[in-house]
Image (cartoon, one colour):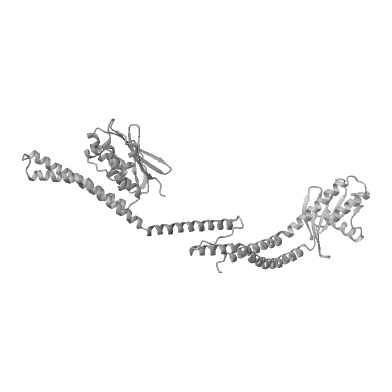
Length: 500
């Protein structure tokens, strides 16, 4: 409960409410009196301007309509007004006609007339505002009556003298009362508001608690619980994401269980392994029969001294060594192929430059190509990085290029190209020469399969190289293929240029 979001929300909103009320209290306490005085002065200005525009003659008597208008104006603005003819200070209008008020008005007017005379200056009168030669506004404190006034004393455009007075008493006391009331109301509102916010915050935290419970059930692999989305806000979108995650996890775990069941069911795989073993033994027996027979025949010839001359003996020995070497190479390839097919050869996926590997293989076969008069085209200069087992891919490229060298004819051209599309790099090795029959294009990947047996025997091939290529690409879960072109054959394979 200590770190509850509900409590945090309530605390933050309560603090915000307290700060807001405190700010209102501070502003009210600091500026209310000044603002009140400003409004009172503005009210006097408005009354003066209104009366000034109304009285445009110097007659001493005003019409009833003018009097009613001024009465409404002064009453609405809380102002007492007195208007005198300039000569003799004869009263033209007075909103309060008692003799006592009249006497006090004349006394105040006299004080304002001689406000600049030090001898007649009244200590309880303060000049607040001066508007040219039109009028002055004073603040006066009546010590006898304990009252404050704002008085406007001036001359109208008609020449009449005008005296306006508004009560300024009691505002400071009212301000204190207002601030005390605001403080009491603030405490009550804060307490009630905090309680209301605490209750309302449950509406926001309840969906989070529901989502927490669903997440716990998901951690126990219970994916039946779903969040009921009722809004399109952040909580609603989070609930939708939790539901989507639950469905995907359920699907993934189901797939993993199925895969586990498949791994446990290995009876079919054992049968396939037995068949592959029988096929392997049959093919090996067939391939080794000829070289063993040759080795045996030439060895018997040497033993029986069929030819006594040194040249014949050297020839017999070379044949035996050549056939033994072919058998050794074939056995090595078969062992390598066997490891790939049975998954015993671990794959070390790294990021490397395929262009560098191709150039390395071309460099190692350069002498052989020159001997056979083969022209190579490989124009890539920029690095091209791929993800794969570099050693295995080098073997694939070596097999493709060796195959191209052995079958290149006609113009004797080998061309190597790289194609990139959608984070996939295709490496293609083309050589001019005889095309492969369309019905045999898919068979070239079969172990010991030879399209032209005579020619394969001529360069010592045994039909295993392309099978190794196929096994390597299968171990990488990538594609390889063979295509007839107009004047030759192209072998290709694909690799990822981006880590998945």
